[in-house]
Length: 130
Image (cartoon, rainbow, N blue to C red; front, side, top):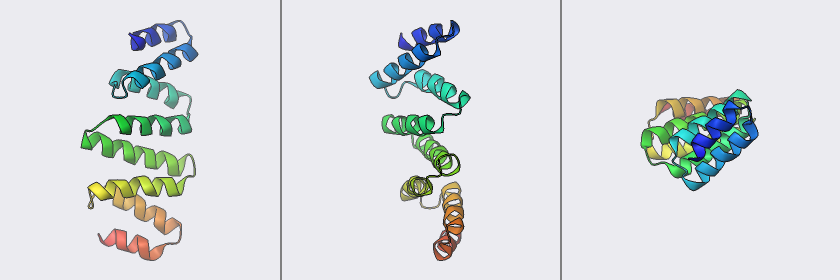
């Protein structure tokens, strides 16, 4: 019901109310895919990187599908490094992927690139060798 109310509010141009209802829907059910998708679209449209990082973190707490978890962690790491300048946070997110999937190519290469850019050549080399 909240997602439908949010859609109606957005239709009449009340984006603040729509966002509020989507957030309420996610508070009630963090795994609500429709509310997540709609709120994500709103945040992406206004280029709200901090809001997206927070939304992805909330989604990660609510889901269990390993493929979705990995995809969201990769996206979150990219946003943290590229848009927020939080390289340490991005590295931590990538390392969390590697705890579950030690050979995950995307996480390995992104983490190695961050380490190399930060001057940690030995760490980057070790990651590239894996």
